[in-house]
Image (cartoon, rainbow, N blue to C red; front, side, top):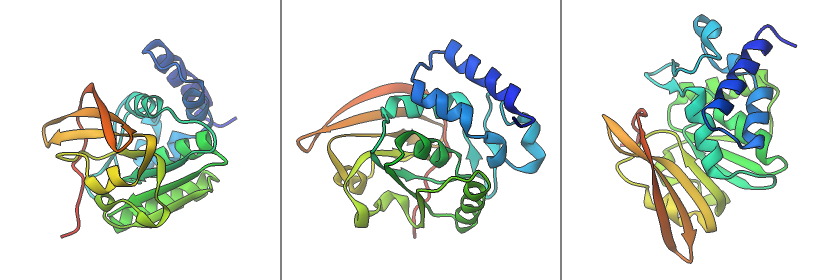
Length: 211
């Protein structure tokens, strides 16, 4: 038990009431402590359903958005997953918890966030995650192909390298659009073709690219 365990249970109850039904996602979010991934000055708000600021104008998404995305990603044990945008490391911790003994690779372009995510994951005693510093829009060819790809910053369109690095029958998910609003797009790859659906409007910080 930790001081936030009760708040975490309330968060889970709220997520269920709002339509989150995936038991793997709910179990991971009850186990992984979000308070270990937010700045010290925001600890008391860790389990409120709100996005919180990190460093370098980046944010940690609100719990409902995180849960919804992971539910739509259709995660299960043994999958190889690529995440674009490690941020604080919270999403990586959740994915790893669900896919274990599968593997997660997460790419982060902001050097300070790479260090932050590594430190947070260590505090949370989460392993089986590899954090790569680099341009996430290029994916990570070395370990391709992936069963699932998720990007947590908005892009004008799904980057082609990410599509190429997805396995057949795999799922890719992320916010697509401009700076002032995006649509959550979920695509399933079927013999090099993509069957996509629009899951509704969201607002994310834009993806950063190498120049």
